[in-house]
Structure formats: structure tokens, C-alpha cells
Length: 387
Image (cartoon, rainbow, N blue to C red):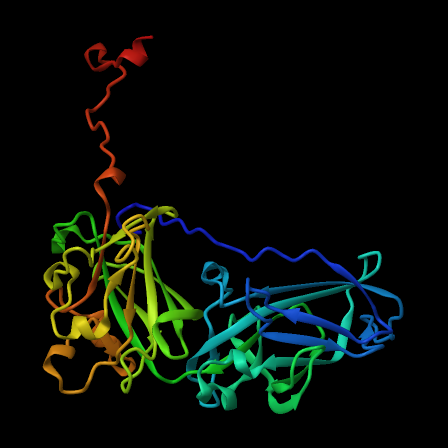
């Protein structure tokens, strides 16, 4: 930091699941995702005698299996998502992924002294959990490359109708995988409808250009709408972060130019690793000038601070529709949402251009004594020093 400060980040990790003991000679089925009141998103099926040692020798006996699943239906898990959800396409360009869940697998022998691999593992994904029909044909299985931080394709899914356990007959997306190393796996869809969202952070509610704060970590959580209920998100699909500079920050997000509420997002901002900044109020007063976005675009984005309907809820986040700006529409040409190809316009946007705002609250400010202290001058000694 050129001004001599430091930025601290809180890194949240997904807690590893306690291992369960399974029999390598039996078919083992492991559910993925057990959100309260919801069926699993997917299920792993490991055929008999599929485990083998590092030297390739077939392993027989009890296996300790730890399967940790990051369930996007639980909003609190978004911050624990590892890496940006990006991959390289055939042309070498970076593209984003929309996640339906991440999982890590850890198999060891019964004494937990030797790591085991597993071959011919099947992934059965419940198609009813995919609420956007266009995603069914695009679903793929990915694994995270720990060296590059990018996701690599493991394989496609195919449709298969049948029963799983005692449940009724339904259609599944079925994929195959082999577990050769400790990697994080992902059920993902490549997504091309992208935009940027402009955010600025301020020292107070005056929102003066000179009071912008650098080093604020802004998080944007892309949500998937509940089928038929555009305002009731059921799961997050992507998590992105950016740090404000002298001209704010631009965060990537999924967006749509046909339906303004096809995608929505929650946005938060923190400073110093823990201090939460407040978003501008949307109720009882709804002031476009204070929010930073003019009408009628603001209504199209349906800006709502988290306490909009319940004043007891924290004021540190807001939710918006991610409506892609219409080309040549004057009121949508200068933010706060920019088409992906206009990333530079977002980065270089002037203060007068539309943007969303966060600010520090009065109670979070600190005053420090700046009176110079000279140890050789008794007149500058403090009471504590004299003691």
C-alpha cells in the first residue's frame, strides 16, 4: 500500500467432514449435499473393489472416507468457496463457471496411514436440483488444479432415468470420475452472460469523492432464482471478490439482457478483515441520489438493502437484479452495471457515473492522540508515563 497501510483478509475454510468407515468389497453410496429440508444434490456411487493403493495394488478391507460438500443452497457457505470459479477455454481465454456444488474426497486405509485412490466412481446428479433448464445440457464435472487455481474439465454428464434407493423414478445426470489425488471437484456450468458491477466505499454518508476508501474487500454472491419466484433465491452460484482502489472496484457477475431478474446478487463490503460497512438504505426512504443510481434503471435493478422488510436484520448488504444494460439506452450507459466487453469503462468510470455505495458508520471511527511526545521534555509527559 503506497500510503503505508495494510489490508487484512479473513480466509474462511470449509470444515472437513469426520470420516465414516465403509467396506471396499461392497457398493458404497455417498450423498452430496444435505441442506435442511432438501434432498441431496447428487450422490457418489463407488463399485466393489474400486479402491487401490498408490502403487496400483487393489486394496481390500475397511476404508475411512471423508467427503466434504460445499452446498450452494446454504448462503453461508459462499465465502468458503476455494479459488475463483474460472477455467481456460480452447482459445486460452478465461471464462467463469456457475457452481452447483463442490466436494473434496479423502480415502485412507482403516488405520488412516495410507491414502487410497478410487476408480470408476459414478456421480449421479438429480436433474430436479437444476432449476435453469438450459444448464442441463451444459453440466460438466471439474477439478481444481492447485498450482494454477483454475478448474479443469473431468468429464461430461449423460441423462439416465431410474431409481436411486427408495426414491421415485426420476432423471439423473450421470458422470464418471477417477480419484487419483486430493483434488477439489465441482459440478459446474460454463456461463457466458457476464457483466461488471461498480462499487465505491466511503468514510461517511456524505459520499464525497475525497472520502473514498481504498482497501475495502467487496464480495458479490451470484444467486439462482427459485423457479417461478424471481425474488426468492434458492442457491448461490458464484462468489467473487475485489478490493477497492482509488476509483472503487468492479466485480464480475452473471447477468441477462432478456429477463432483468434472471440473475440476482448479494453484495457486502468489509474493511480491515472484520469491520462491516453499511449499504445505503432502501426503506423507509428510497432515494436514488443517495443510492448512487438514477431512475428508471434503479427500479429495474430492484435495489434492496437486507433490512428492507425487517429492520432487525443487519444493514451490511444489498440485493440487486443483474439486468444487463441495453445498448444505446442513455440511462443505462454509464453504470452501475457494465457489459463484460466494457470492463475498461467500468474501471475508469468517473465519480458522477452511477455506482453502488457502502460507507463506514459513525460507531466504527476512532480518534487517536496526535500530540507529539518528547521523552526529554517533562512538559510533554503523560500521566501514565509519570506513574
